[in-house]
Length: 418
Image (cartoon, rainbow, N blue to C red):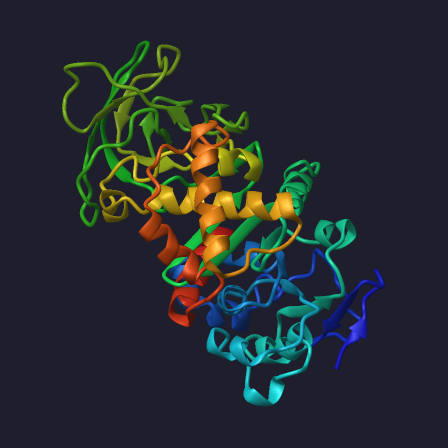
């Protein structure tokens, strides 16, 4: 069913080319292939064909074939991902059937990863599905993103996160996800200098040019064309001009974007008292006078975003729901669950053994959480209710399939943003 890859580490279920091995630059479908584009036509309408083609060149390595991992792989494979490598040496247990819909009773006792490869392959024969015997630097370096979906000691999580974020010339994305009962945790790190190319996912705003002043901080008056929703461009947005009569040079003007790239666009600004449907651009004094016509189109430019490392986020996750009120915040469970997760990982690191159910163990985790908060080893300011903590920890290692599906969708969507 599989062949040994050139590295000697991975085993591939090679649906299209038995000799393809693991090629980090392999694509799931040829650019410009009409059948391939038609297959993902609805996805192209939502994400754009450029995003779909980018995903065909991406590879993900999944550590732990849990229920969440199965949902992540399903979503990535169906979206045309270039390849997925599974790492899990455990055998299928009967409880795995409760959270992983790709497993059957007949699979009990078989290797998890190799059992799942042909099942995932049925979803998209063009995706290169592989298994690896162990998580190594060599394996990770062949991929775009590392996803940890199973238990891993704190020191190992920190180690692999630091390895991924320090790769050159581009960091490898790192995702950690775990779930138990009705709670889940997701951590995403695209590196210390990730460039975000689209901050809102909306189609670029388009406006008709009514007039362009000549001078410094020139005022551009605009109107809303038919079919476009009313609204204002965000402060500091970049725009490009097209089909302008007169004002020669305004359509070819270039300046640096926040990420340092030189773009053919103008950075906009405004002043108090400016009329509605207007923007200000740079100096147009050297251009001929504006004559007529023209379109203003919002240009999405790269914006650098600094992600926290796992160690930093574990200590200081920040405040969720900055721009809106979250019901979870009102009920007080968002920050306490993070503190309890921190306590579990810290206790495991101290003892060298995984968390185990039991009254004594629960009491130890609660005490550790309170200690972390009191000693400022955690920046989370939250009261730990013993009753709530006991309920949270009771199902700490009990995944529920519907919640696995929910978290799998979140994680796959985060990978698409890469």
